[in-house]
Length: 210
Image (cartoon, rainbow, N blue to C red; front, side, top):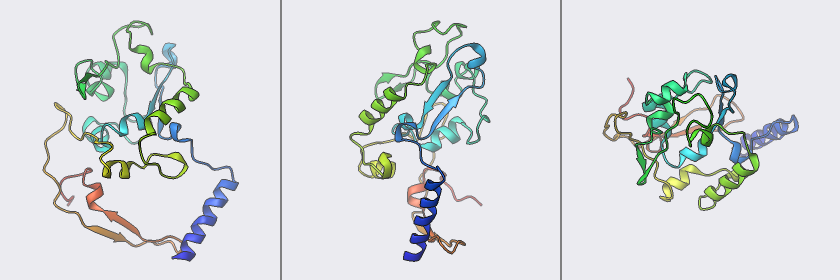
C-alpha cells in the first residue's frame, strides 16, 4: 500500500513538473457558454458549479433537467431558457429558492440591457471578484486540499442541503434500499482498489440497473 501511494506521489510530482496544475478553487468547474453569445455581440456566460452545488444535487441538473456531460452537447440557448428548459427550468422569474424568487435567465429582447437581469449572466469575467465571492461563500464550509470545498463533509455536517427534486420536472422516487460498500479491484500495480459506496451515490439512481 505504501509503495502504491509513493508511486502515485511521484506521478503527481511528475505531472506538476510538466506544468500540470489544478485551477484555483473559484475557477474549478467553470463552464463558459458561448455557442452564440459572442456572435450576438454580448459577453459569454460563465457558469460556476460551486454556486449551484450547495443548492442542488448533480443528478437533478444532469438527469432531470438534462444538462449534458459532453461539451457543447446540451444545445442551450436563450430560446430554450425562455421555454423553461435548461437554465429556464429554475430561472423563470417565478420559482423560488428559500423563499426568494429566482430571476429569469433570458428575455426576448435583442439588446443586453433589454432586461435588468441580462448582465447578471452575460458579463465579462472578473477573476478578483469571483475569488472574493468564492471565499465568502466557502468560509463556513470544510475544505479539502488546495482550498476546494469538501462537499461530502459539508453534507454530512448538514451545512448544505442540496435539493434533489424540481416540481414539474422531477419524478418522485423511492429511496434506494442499498447502502453497501463494494471494492473494485484496481488493475494498476501502483494504485489501490476503489471503494464504491452506494450510500454516498444513492442520489444517482433509485433502482439497481439491470
